[in-house]
Every structure is written in structure tokens, then in C-alpha cells.
Figure 1 (tube, rainbow, N blue to C red):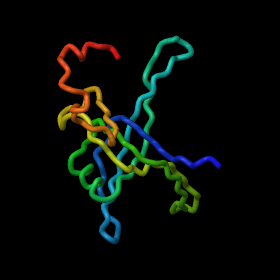
Figure 2 (figure 1 turned 30 degrees about the vertical axis):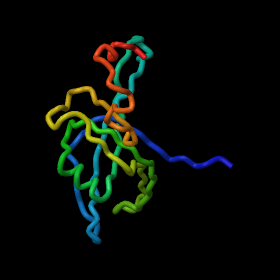
Figure 3 (figure 1 turned 90 degrees about the vertical axis):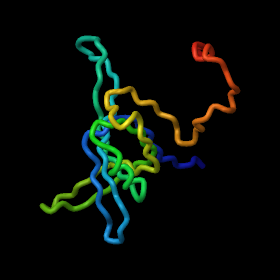
Length: 145
């Protein structure tokens, strides 16, 4: 029997400042809106262009509080999480539905003032020190593999 997998990894920029609220029990919940560009070829002109996709992201607990404190509109982030579908009755009586991303981890990319820089994503499980690779010389950076 096949295993079920519900995993999402996105790297993009925030389209607005984070919104922090708390549940009645005091748990922090932070809402983010993330824009992720997709390269597409225009059928009419044959030219490549960027098309933005927008995603609602929910971050719970201490990580949500950190997002609200340190992130701002335009900041690049990497989100690792899962999709969740929800349905509710609107005030006008219509049924509404939405798909959102529940973040397991949010990685802040770039510096605080860097919103136009190219984001560098390092998966959460990757070690940042290069001690496993020896002391390598600067010329090693020129090797294309």
C-alpha cells in the first residue's frame, strides 16, 4: 500500500507584513502571504516571463511570533509545510473553502534590509558548517560540479 504524502516547499517573497493573533488559549498564530514566481513561455510571443502565484501560510506557536517580529513585506522566506483544505459557512450563508499551507518551518532568507536579493535556500536539515569537506582552497569554488 502506498504511503500518503502531503509536503510543500516554497521559496518566495512576502506580499504584506505578517499578521499575528492569538487563540483563546494563548497560542500564537501568524498569517503570511507569499508570492512565488513561475517562469512561463508566452504562447503568442514566444518570450519567457514571470507569473506570480500567491499562497496563504499559517505559522503556529513561537515560530509564528518570530515571523511577526522579524519579517516584513518584501522579505524572502523559505517555507516547508503541508497543505490543508478547510470549509466554512460565510456570514451570508454561502459555503466557502480555501487551501492554505500550514508551516512546519519558516527560514528567513537574506538580511533584514535585503528584499531585492536572490534568496539562498538551505534545507532545514542541512548543516551550515563545511567541516566534512576538508579545508578546500578558494579555487575549489570555480569547479562547476
